[in-house]
Amino acid sequence: MSGVFSMFAYHFVQRAMLVGVLVSLCAALLGVSLVLKRYSMIGDGLSHVGFGALAIASAFHLAPLYVAVPVVVAAAVLLLRLRKSSRVKGDAAIAIISSSALAVGVIVVSLTSGMNTEVSSYMFGSILSLSRGDTVLSVILSLAVLALYLLLYPRLFAVTFDENFARATGTRADLYNTLLAVLTAVTVVLGMRMMGALLISSLIIFPALGAMHLAKSFRGVIACAAILAVVCFVFGMMASYVFETPSGASIVVADLIAFAFCSLVGRKN
Amino acid sequence: MAILTCENASFSYDGKTVLENVSFSIKAGDYLCVVGENGSGKSTLIKGLLSLKAPAGGRITLGDGLKKNEIGYLPQQTDIQRDFPASVREVVLSGCLNSLGGRLFYSAADRERAAMNMERMGIEELADANYQELSGGQQQRVLLARALCATRKLLLLDEPVTGLDPVAAGEMYNLIKLVNLCDNISVIMVTHDIHEAVRYATHILHLGHKQLFFGTAGEYRRSALARRFLGGGGL
Image 1 (cartoon, each protein chain N blue to C red):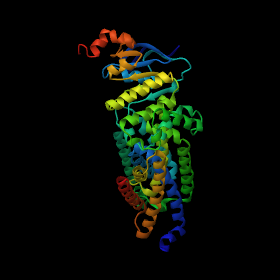
Image 2 (cartoon, rainbow over the protein chains, first blue to last red):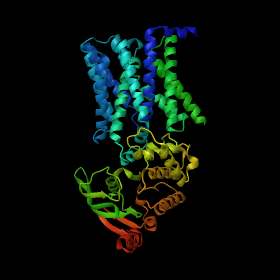
Image 3 (cartoon, chains in turn green, blue):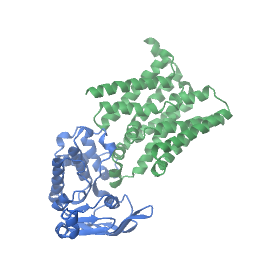
Image 4 (cartoon, chains in turn purple, red):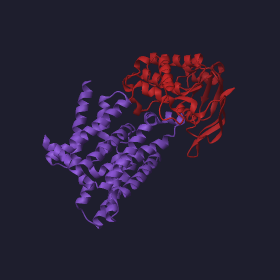
């Protein structure tokens, strides 16, 4: 067992742990609202946009996060606008944006560096990719996401449960929907360096779904999802160290096991 | 003094008029039922009254100090809500949203108001129960308690008994009438159930893309339109 804990001696592991726990928390909280509003795939769509942005940033040797965060935030706002227009339905809008962004990313990659380890780390995640500067920015942004979510909790609950009622009582539902999308965008970008573009949406969806099997109140679901997310992240990282498996995929498997457990327990009750 | 007046209001979607020439007003304590066939513009009118949709013409004005965000609204339930993990207390408390103002969290007074409205609806024992596990009738009571948290003057109910069994529907009608009589809260209710409408309401508004009738329930019962609609001669 002491072998597992020796991993914490490495600086890059410490950084990954800190950022990972914070991002998992953000993803879990936002995930509850997104899953309930039937926006589950937004995380997936935005991560593909993130891949495109990171590919372009690396081609032009720019700091990846400083490019990806604004681009993905813009994509999130655009997605909500598209969803509102009756011509393009919600899931189709996500498919359009995500596959286009992926295509741009792939073309940029093939024209410049070609498939290399850096690109592969964007797709499947790598805990080695977090620099010191990235860590500081990630910690600040994820704390901001957490703070906003908790401070606006009553309003976000109302908008999630019943948008029409919230609107009728004078709440600016569009503002809060946009805020949710922007916070999700930031979380996705922060998480995808570690989890990978293809796996990040699991951080958003699994803890929320698992928690819904266990808790009876919204507050309970939020708390449960937060705990599940952090526990799964830590166990996933440890497993990845012990079995030498990729970190992102290991975390997803930990989430999957926890979800299966929750649904079994939930069914029994 | 009228708390809500609609003057020659019309509504359109994409330039196509769906409802026109609607003129009525309701006073404190009135109970107005909006009836008409599917697609006659009932839901559109509700959206207009809640300022969720701007009228294409005419005016809707509120009086007697009623503010736009102080209308207690009971919407038709959506699928999302049916499997939403929330406790009854959380749902009812969210009705106090409009009294938050600039505050971030609900106050003790808000919580008290929510508790009082749960008691009025006879659901105080369900406060910690999961909303999605309640029966249809209980869910509607929760939503009515929430609507009461949002208003002291006017309730707007969109088909509140749809999907309820006859007993639960009867209880719901009685609760609404009770709130109307005891608290002097005006009610505007959209309903399919014209027999119950003329039984409980003081006024009837009959729509069919335009205003076909507006007047007291007694006048409506004697009208030719009602005789046809109530099933006297059949349609």
